[in-house]
Image 1 (spheres, helix red, strand yellow):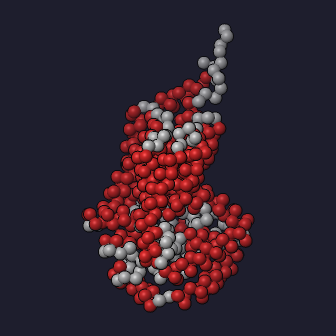
Image 2 (cartoon, helix red, strand yellow):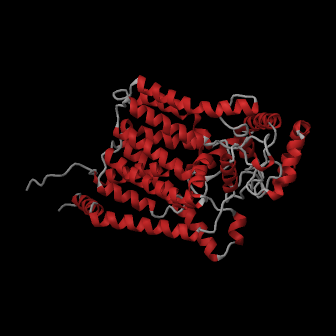
Image 3 (cartoon, rainbow, N blue to C red):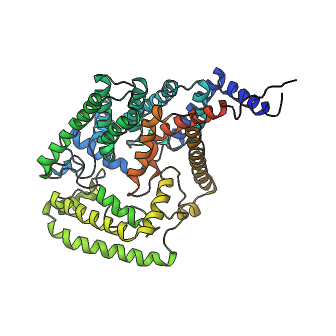
Length: 480
């Protein structure tokens, strides 16, 4: 065998190994063991959003979409979409406790992995590609972690996985496929309102990138079905807040405002809005000696905002605040006029800040684009952690960082070499790109990309195996 044959022989050996049934099933078992270990290790961890979701679910079961249902009428929610609270309420109503939700999420996680493996098949992958997918999934402790939390990540992951599976299975949509995907996108939006524009983006990309299969009528039907899913919450907002709005009263403006100041005030805990802690990242985007002045500027800005909104507070708002200490599953829900003006002022200031500070915005949001995919280390937490805690933080950062690096190196290379086709994989790319871009104006949270992580791994597995099988050069002929 000549020198050019050696790499091909090595590739063939690796491919044969990964394609073995024994290897594939061993990887399945290892992933199951890792998932169970993560759930066991995190069984005492309850993240903060749990209480607002649970409070809304309890409110639904008592006939009100409110965390403040024990206080009577007049506290309609302004904070969250109803999709996940309804999901939680369903299982609490059926089984009497919220732990049943976690069992359902475990089943949905297993379903998500199954759908991802089937999607690899539909895209032309084989058992070796499925094995690579399972290898990539093994160190991703941040994905199965959310099985054990009352967070929407796992149900949204399953819905996205099913939508991608249907898209891969039915390149030419029937009316049933269009309705099904429209309903799935509706559920995704009801859990994650940032997906409001996704169906339109999908329809446009389909017509531009997949002209041979995309048909206008099924796409319009999908968008129409999605639009119909927006109407009930919009009507509820009109009845309870006096405005037809398909997203919560508080949302983009407040999170954009936090998204700007978080990079200016590392280590600061907000005391005006959500009580967010602004992470003290390894990379800073403001000089250390400027942080106290930035904190003062932030607090002065809030003082200015409060001067305008506090006159709108009502007796019910005061009663709510006084009752907060005895109602655990709650988040402040102010009256409609107060909330809408606060949102308007925060959005205006956020946009002005971003436009007036372009170099900071560009640098910080470029970093944010990476941090959405790579778990960061907070300096204060790292210093105070035990050795085991430090190792856990380092592992989370290094594993997600390595996966992200492999993705940005090998997936583009696979497209350039024709191993992956835009024509068949553009829906996956759209989910990944949309999930990144739409979250950039807000605070950095790597959990925002958890629902689309499996899509990332599908592309990586297809790319790695495609490049592994593709010869680096044409075979040589021995003329002797």
